[in-house]
Length: 238
Image (cartoon, rainbow, N blue to C red; front, side, top):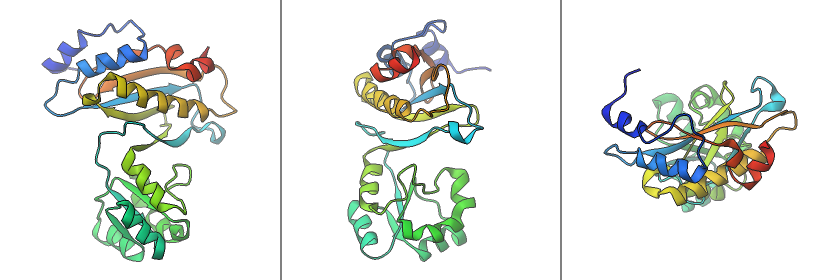
């Protein structure tokens, strides 16, 4: 694969054979973020589980202390007082049958997070084939199906992210922008790792955190020593 000049220059800063401490890895990821836009820093965590088994799924949500740096557009399925509370909390659009019809009939998808009151799930279930493949279907595990929709809106706006295994047993998550700097990114990274560790399935055997890489949107990956991903994580993977 042929890479651009900036990628090649950034790759020269990284020793591909080395496993870096998290703080140093994040510092390098920021240095390689040389695009004209504020690149997102991503974490890619490979776990020692098998996502094909229901008892080894890893999924959840966590609020990053420094946010994601992204403006989050929130759609809420609710009625009555819950709808008013969601609007007051800052949701961009709130509705029920009308919102379902807009998504189904017009293909309207101008939102990043969908939140639903439990009473709305019979209605929202009709959108499974539309929202599911896009990762937007409200879910109790992700905290996006909740009786407290106002709190869920506030958390989404503050930088709540969902993490889940893909088919190759890897979790891919944004942990902020390059402009945050290594210190704030480290706080976000540690928060994510702690959440992933706490979500370890009882059926998981052997080393749980197999590998971890951080990278800027347009930059090369920086490998992190999985035994140095924070006190809680280190205790799990020794």
